Image (tube, rainbow, N blue to C red; front, side, top):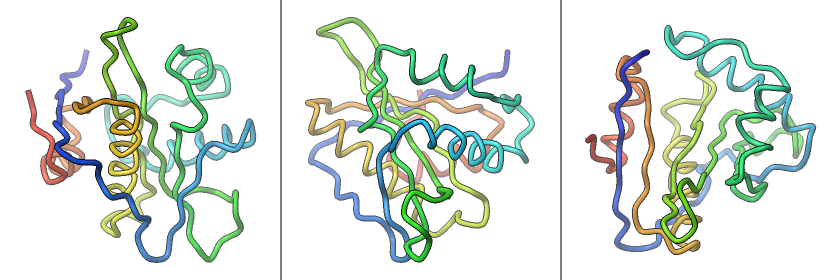
Length: 165
């Protein structure tokens, strides 16, 4: 089993979450977004060496739609502002709530950005969007995990204000 790093961040105020120039954000719009998400995941993780097995409709169903934390308004997509609304997204993130009732934990889940759209503010704006939603849900602490070998992801989370450990 690959080593993972667990990150946490404590929120002191509701984060601002505007989409970066040239992009717009939207939530899940229905089953057609499954193919969009699968294509984006494949593109975003194809260069990674760990944890990137092929996904399909059944895997998406098991990982998202059948989970008790699943909420359509907690899965966001970033799209180029000059593209068609509801077209192929270039970034995505989900906000999960894990744990038992009364002790739920907000968890950043499956942040992905297509390689040609990285380093343009998309990932940070998606993270801040999820953090703002967590704040609105009453959470002040967020958690996430990523593979230790995904160095760019680890650097990103540290730069975004997350602490490892």
